[in-house]
Length: 353
Image 1: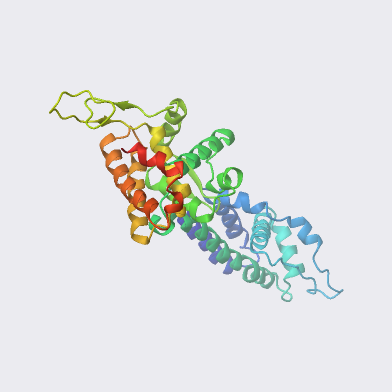
Image 2: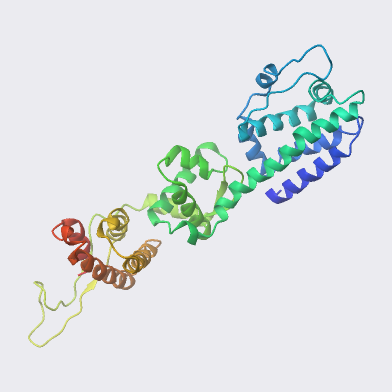
């Protein structure tokens, strides 16, 4: 059952409960509890249930005076606690209808008729729960469906780290891993933009699927699993590999007079990843203007795309040389002159000849 179908069924059960009488309320309550604990909603309600203690809440209720109907509940201001308590009231009522009658009579007394008490609980507790719970679910679901252009471009290293974390969480628990769990346990330093842009990138690439629930549980696709397994099985190259045929204007001159040569360079994944990481970490130090920054970002994105598979040396080299031109201009400018003597950018620039 999808999230939207479950919320529709939940709303229908609440509508039936609104129209129920003292001897017909049990079925819609049971249907409501069943929907909340089935399909994709179960993962959300399991998490939500842990936010509050119903028995402790009832113990802290205002007993009122001797007059019937004077007892009252001290509902918390915190939204999640309130949702958790209302959820537990619904579940306990579905399991024990007599408990629900007594709960309604004690805290939502509306005169002599039992049906009036039940309708007051429905109006005061269950309908607000249905409304706020739907909003709560959609808020988290919408985070992952935001257009990637609004949240920025995720780096390949971030995508792999998040995917690997999800992979490990799934293996450890035997259940669908959660993006929010990965954030809390593995990447507490990631801000909202970084987390969601990376998750969205994994979704767009088909590496994860079916995001559901407040904790954003996902399935890892077969492609995603293969990516993690291949990354783990492949040792990182330790150095740049350069295949030299004939080189012109180089210490490695092997041509006879009048001849010309072509240098063929293949870039290792390790080197290209170093370029991406170095750029991401230090680009702000260069003081690039908006146009330069967009151009540089585009070249880095092209290099990063090659990391998804065996790098195409031609594409990597073209992007790298364009990036080199931009960086050389920045390093030689007034804003970048302080960096001109730094080996930081020199190492990157020299990689692309």
